[in-house]
Image (cartoon, rainbow, N blue to C red; front, side, top):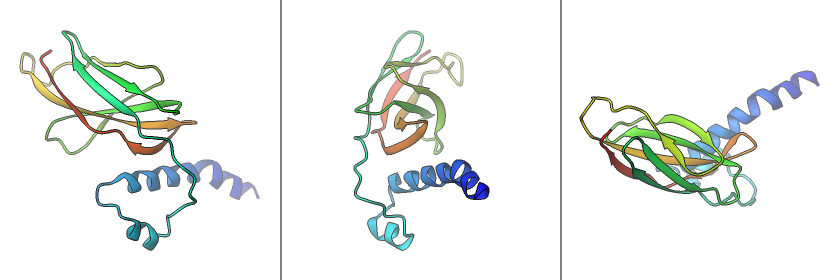
Length: 136
């Protein structure tokens, strides 16, 4: 019994998060979900968060709507880079990205997205990707 509870506590949240991420991937289809046997109940997930980005003199301001979520995980990357960097979990809009420019004095195009969070787990679909030019 203790082993089962340990699995529930430690492994199940990781597995659920992985499956949630798979289902939000561009290449995911219901047929793939059926093949992997990861089609769940018809329980509705919350709407995906909406975000806007605005460059200021010192940072990029990311405003978001939670739409019934506890908060959002904010991710960013330079345009053209494949991997996303986790920036923060935030429960109140806006989030301010105050990272320095990769090369001082050279403006860069940054992309941002958010994924909703309920009870410390990412849920639902990722927001649309927003782009902003930040000059530092």
